Length: 112
Image 1 (cartoon, rainbow, N blue to C red):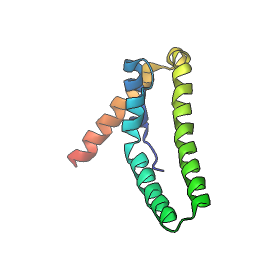
Image 2 (cartoon, rainbow, N blue to C red; image 1 turned 90 degrees about the horizontal axis):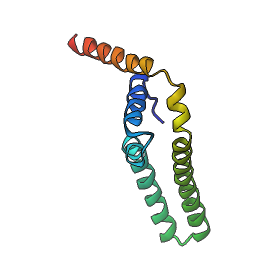
Image 3 (cartoon, rainbow, N blue to C red; image 1 turned 60 degrees about the horizontal axis):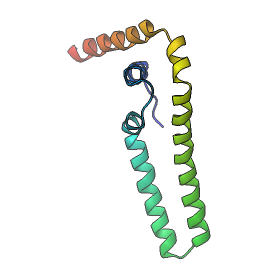
């Protein structure tokens, strides 16, 4: 799993604030590559297991991947329910400053 920079996290928070909380679309967009890799790897494993007719392991792998996706959707639902509190206690000026400071750093680094 890749690490997110403070800039990326600040930008995601600002986008979520504009949308009134984290949306399914924003969540999927920010995690698209990870889910694509997961689904492709799982599809290959499931195809092999079906080919060799190992149905018990097929069901186990399919269940584990389905559970992981459902866990992530559960996290998204939980974050939606607590968004009003997060919005109240977050210092949005600091979040905006982090996004802008990191933008300035990126501009300086790319100019070199």
